[in-house]
Image 1: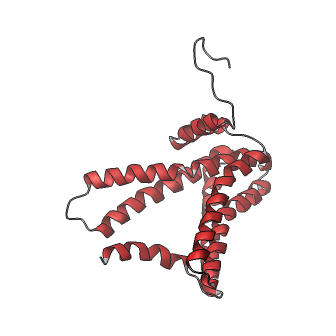
Image 2: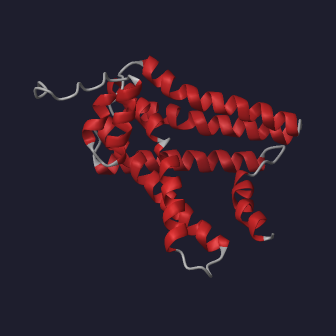
Image 3: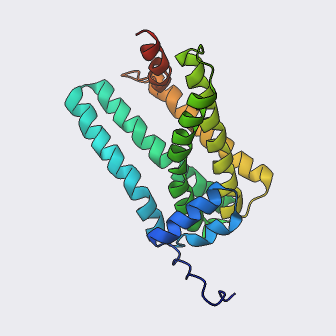
Length: 212
């Protein structure tokens, strides 16, 4: 399809402008955003690079602060969080005969995960505006986390359905498989030495603020 005369040229798929455009489209439920991402393994590696870089920086800071076995367990678990969706979705894509679609889907999924940060900032502003003055910090945090969690679930489901050409049921199954894998990794981390329980870290955050 040719563009109209005088219309600005569309950015190339996989370019920074194309990635940003694709994120904005998919984040609003627009299926055409998938075409803005690259279709090669390099596109996946490029999308994965910022996460790996953050993991490396976080790992160095964690070890510098507390060079213990527990810190090592935290670093290993955070790496599993980064890689589990990549590995698991590739296995499912191969099982369902969608392996050729996987690189573009995975690149889109990795980049679109950053949209959750923008949603979080918007949700903070909305909750701060509409929340009654007497509501506790814990209740406000629960509302905020609920909004972010719901959007993240929907976005993961939608990108999987569009990117891998799945029906609603299979996209939901992929979402549940990722959640189950992360839950299983959390359980293994808590059971095996040095017994790091990720959920204790997550649940301790509101309490720490609320005790002040």
